[in-house]
Amino acid sequence: MKKTLIECLGNVTDYRSGNGVDHKLIDILVISILAVICEANYWTELEALSILGRLGHLIWKLCLMLLST
Image (cartoon, rainbow, N blue to C red; front, side, top):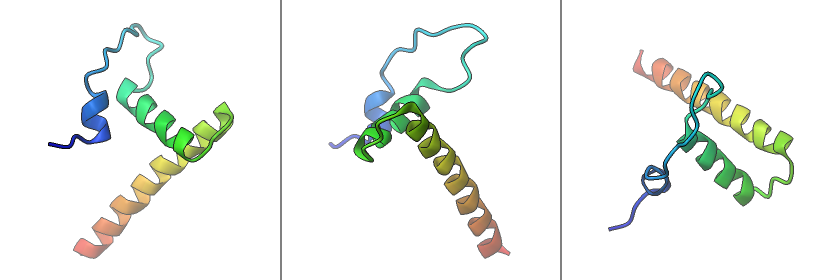
């Protein structure tokens, strides 16, 4: 049976701890892999990809709300 990317990365142990952990490890890993696929070369490009992903998610939720009314 094929696994999704999130299922495969879900078994990675997160050794980070403390107040400095702002994001889930799985989110960081998936965004990093997508950035590599998109040929991102700098951290700023990875950050831009993550911002666009969040924006896209919000737009998708808004569209679903508008369609359900």
